[in-house]
Image 1 (cartoon, rainbow, N blue to C red):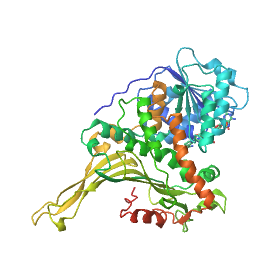
Image 2 (image 1 turned 180 degrees about the vertical axis):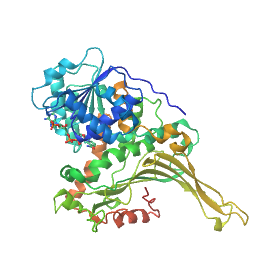
Image 3 (image 1 turned 90 degrees about the vertical axis):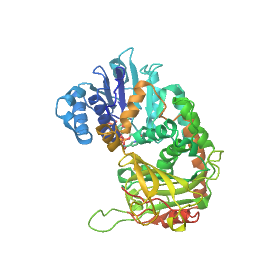
Image 4 (image 1 turned 120 degrees about the horizontal axis):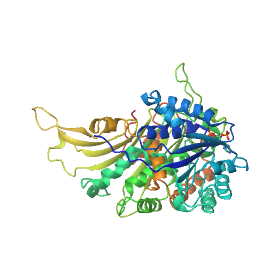
Length: 488
Ligand code: NAP
């Protein structure tokens, strides 16, 4: 199966923070891969911008190194990389000063799409928006891409929305959540709304519960200082897991269009129940000893021996509407867990009665949507165990792994950033968060965090390489359920 690549119009893309970690690991490699796929036209111009003193040639060397490391492949060696690098330029500027802005304005061309990627710390978003406007760099059709974190709580998110709104229309603002750019997440919508099979069953009558797990094996790494002010709730739950929950729970939008989809997601967030304190488990990872994989505890890693910030969170919530009343949604995410695995499991109810007798057992279908690794969708169905000797039932997976079903196209899906940056150029906001969505998510998150602070709660320690604190298992067991395994 060969996928069609539709080239985008020529564009000027400015990456503020073009020398940073995100530009190096994600943005530049993603642009290169789209160039190799033939989606970026040869007239496109990509300008890195930061305080560093690069010229175009120095920035091309920087980008070449990043691409060789993070998007290795034959196209790096066959001349394509050289052609791509010719598209790159660099401007030295300070987001907080006035140097460099005139230079940047002079390099942009009239009559084509202008996009500005804010790949800098959130403290600079307002400065950039203001100077883009002041120096006449942005025009009414320009787009800005804003990275996470989008605010620290409702008040700061609101403030940031207002700052951006002072210079840009909502239709120009692309708040990125890279989970939405993942191929499987989009496939989730295709499976739900492109098939007759699932939607009639997609409700409290047939679904027992939903589990969403985003497990990481890494610790806080070099982000300790930031992470300790955020924790798993702000860093992952409020955005990534919330977005996944929305896509699972939302009503079918009338059209696959930005506001139609985002209206439905917003309704889900607003229908979320407050989370009761005993429906949340917070954890902090311990140190790991031993020669291999030894690493410090969370508190050592962030340099705060009394930290009360969670590196793990599990919670139960409900979407209080007609479709989902009574169906629990269990969400968990954490660092230094057993395996790197992001999975959504839609756990259908057991058949109401077994015609095969008690020994055949009762069985339930499970729809598993794997985001990483090995993106794909699996439906667990019950069949007869082969062979003579009676009617024994067995659960087997109907595997929709893209690698097998779609051949080479499926085995190497585009990275989320590839898809999302091309959507910015095309002017399609469907997979980006709207300002009111982000605010609604904070409005749900804030009281939960305020409760921990008020009660002085300290997260439970958990072993690195485990599935998290034992209390998270109890959260399930109290409801007669259990978590799916965390497997790579
Ligand atoms: P980073 O490695 O610290 O890079 C920051 C960039 O901003 C550098 O290019 C830096 O270059 C530039 N910069 C800093 N101060 C500046 C100023 N006053 N004027 C102009 N440029 C300035 O940060 P990052 O990890 O790339 O993260 C960038 C953004 O993406 C952050 O909002 C982060 O939360 C978000 N994000 C990052 C990741 C990731 O994996 N890295 C993932 C998700 C979200 P100079 O010092 O030369 O100016």
